[in-house]
Amino acid sequence: MPKYFDFKINGYYLYFTTHCVVEAMHAHASDGRLTEGGSAKFFVKSNGDTVVQNRGSISEADIRRLQRFIKDNYELMYAKWRIYSSEGFYRGE
Image (cartoon, rainbow, N blue to C red; front, top):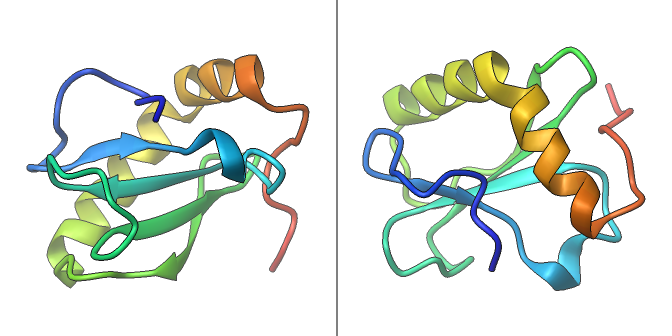
């Protein structure tokens, strides 16, 4: 599973799986286990805003912190995403 960064953000890794690159750009947030079971899923828009599809077991405060981090770093994250996927940013509401 490719990680966007090698370090944790508020105790969570941001990553994606190679089988889910057929969707719009997104990030899973999970602790060291990197499983989708308790992870949150953030679809990323072209301005860095996110749409949370799944909160998993992550607190609301951590969700907000992760959203701020993604907003501040989405361009770096997108560069990594483009290595694996031809899909662009999330275009939903």
